[in-house]
Amino acid sequence: MATPSRLEVSVPPRHESLASRLVRLIALELELGWAETRSLVIRVAVALAVAIPAAIALLASIVVLAAGALAPLFHTPWQHLVAAGGFVAVLALAALAWSAWRLTHIAWPQQTLASLQETWRWLVAQLKSKLTSR
Image (cartoon, rainbow, N blue to C red):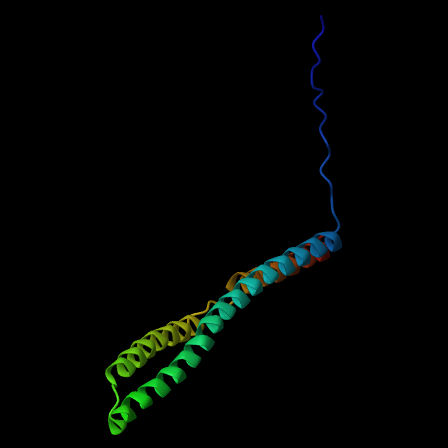
């Protein structure tokens, strides 16, 4: 009984043109840039999604604190207003501080810029080698 055996066929290496390799590199650069930009936009959106409600809550807590400050003038209880307003103000300030820290510490797309520089160096080297080989 014969067993099938795999034929070892060596495929000669493809010699791609400089233009096709450059097009493939540009496509990869765009994909990397899109991925880093998407990450950057998501980080900014999360920080803003936290900051906007926190700013609104801070304004509301200031109103509640002002009501707590005016409550003794009308001989009404004020402690619950000050406690609630203060608690919300502290939480809102913490959320705003986190958002500000997050926005000031965003990493810009360094990998894309480094990759573009490397691609540029590669292209210059390829063009120089083509000129000297002729």
